[in-house]
Image (cartoon, rainbow, N blue to C red; front, top):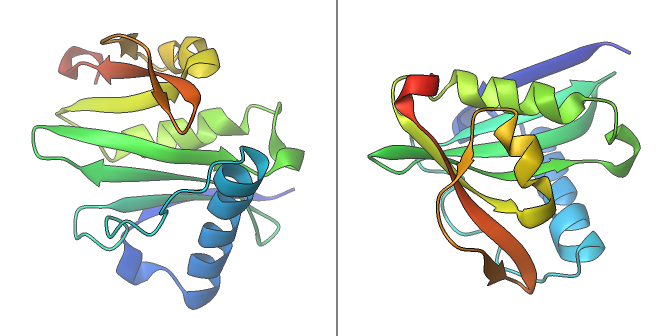
Length: 147
């Protein structure tokens, strides 16, 4: 399989990529995790936002979203199609997302069972566990020194 992973602003996505991205996030977060939430929050189209798309043989396998929050970057909406999990592809997504965050801290809210995996990318727990959509999360931070 030929893999490609890119980080692009919203205005460089094709209509097909936007559809595939929305579909993947809906399938994982809304359907699989049973968490109806307003995915279209307006942040996808912000000028500083980068969408990380992992494709294999022209099919979207994974995604992430990198937001410019001013003092820090924020990574979220990290997802893989079920068939792509357990193959190390999430590492490819995270390395690509981190590549666009140079020079500033990066924050994210990790689902608690994934905190150890995020730690392998230099993130440390940065606060108490909290519930979001009835799923336990931990705030995590990757300092500038790790860049």
